[in-house]
Image (cartoon, rainbow, N blue to C red):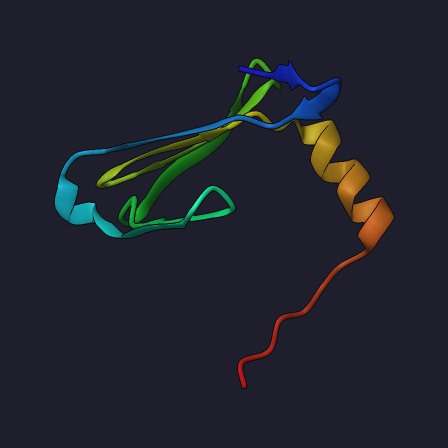
Amino acid sequence: MSQIRNGQDERMFTIELKSRGDVKRLSWDGDEKVLVEGSIGSLKHAHFLEDLVLEAIGSNGVLRMDLTSRDLEASKLISGPKVRTEE
């Protein structure tokens, strides 16, 4: 799933949903910004496939992302934990 484009490491993702109704919003602003919002439903299982792809399986679909457990660990070391508060 990992690809190199323009000499840079890219992270790929796929989303498989059971129904179009699970897509809440899909919008794009010309060639610049794209937003995909939806629901994979309640989380049933999340795991790494061969430590290459993070897979989150929900009741309504599956999200796969080209991300390893090492990537997550490195991200924690670089940025530290973040706490998000609601305003």
